[in-house]
Image 1 (cartoon, rainbow over the protein chains, first blue to last red):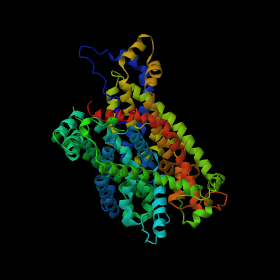
Image 2 (cartoon, helix red, strand yellow):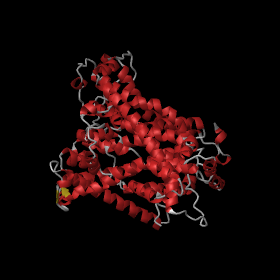
Image 3 (cartoon, helix red, strand yellow):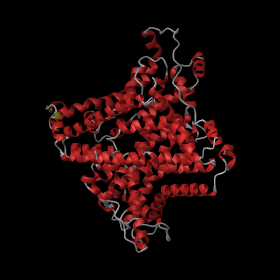
Image 4 (cartoon, each protein chain N blue to C red):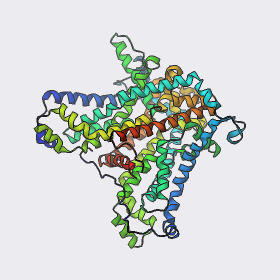
Length: 323
Length: 300
């Protein structure tokens, strides 16, 4: 795939300045069918994205199921005060941040390393085969991934079975709060590392061959070529992904943690998204859950904005450009 | 083998070659081994699984008891049918909505195209939170309705942006030629644009199908447990240790482990079967092009 970078999707050619816009009524008559087929998609975004965005107002009410969304009482920022006084919230924030940090340290560079290995293969057949294999776990649901890890690493799993057969001590991995963080990092690497190579492979395929050639002629070995050619060439992609990751620093994934929280208990296993579920929906304090969710969303938005600004300051392209 | 290696690179040393080969073998084995062991455990005879402590890597005696038990229970069969139905209907609805919206937004001068696009791109930065999304579904009266598993995830913003990028790449000469021949927008979409975008439609169809098949949390949120799709049922059996016999009339005499693994296999098979058909489109650079177009959304 790295050999066929595919057609770059560029934005459509800009309208030439001399072309005059027809009046709105004519354009409406011309575009009515296009506008009609947009309706389902636009309604979806209105209801389930903007409706949900608007629905955050519930964080400023004291939601009681009996009264419903509209007739529950307004209470201002009381729920936010409750939230900040809740030690479970801070425990969940701490767990989220530390898992996020570990993800950044181990899960972020893993696809880059695998992509460089794949890119260096000279046999297309082998590369295609390995790619097909490593993409596969991305399509497997978290329920199954957790089941697979239990079967391999659990108390009665293959790994411990082999240890026991060999007369060695078994290791307590699944359901052990101390092993939880390494376990969830290993799971996400197993599931998503291969898929994550795609974007890096595309970037690697775009590096100018001649730069490598010139460097090689100048006597640069593999390390120097990687350091002075490859990494600078793909830096914009790395920075783009870092910015997006930074915006998601309070999001480590929901399903994976929802499935395994109970096995290790909330002290080790609660992250912000599961906190929202257990406090908000399970215990019925919808407003508190909504307040936590809103906090998380706003912080994420600010972080993306700040990281993007920072990237521009360093002369990088970033994610978006205003104006 | 070495036909692709440029002259300047020189021949790799045997050591480098060996390290790479080992690394590749390890990566492939780590990915495939878990699948292998669940299949092996599910087809081993129950006695062997019990004797071996709950797992099997190389089964010595084959048995399909686990599978017959799973299907006799009725619960899994029912859940598989629900999953299949949601996946089929959901994928169809999602593809139609995505293709339509993406095509309209790919036309350069459509009325209101730009503000709508910006409003949609904003949802990347502020995805819906769980509680408000729950309340929207509740207020729309969708709870305990199968539509609650489809409508709240009808259009994926990433898929939409990717598809729009491809539609923009259809040469405008073709579209203009069709227009001169008297084709309307709808005809242009179905006869010109869509046939040229088969690969991307297939890949995005796979993405939707996989996400419908794999989803379990929305079902837990919105549906009664007797309406659950297979992944939600699987969660009970596998991660919460619920016994199959609790949920079905039939008493399971089998080793629960091989039965559990049979359920895992059943829930995985559709993906393994579908994967090779769409995987060939990955090689055509659909994904790389897709991701590049996403990267370019920065410049309006």
